[in-house]
Image (tube, rainbow, N blue to C red; front, side, top):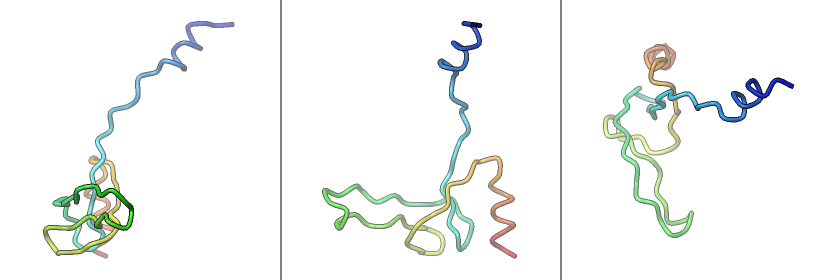
Length: 74
């Protein structure tokens, strides 16, 4: 067995790709995250400060942000 290969697989450093939340309506990254509540019923949805949309937001790699914005503007 090649122990170096096994060790490099098991102890590989995770890639540091930066992910950002993007509004699916306007493409803004100005997303306000509400404080976490004690119960799922108490928590509020994320909020776009640009277009006032509340709901679920896409999580996109920062390097692919412009491609995502082009797709939603079509």
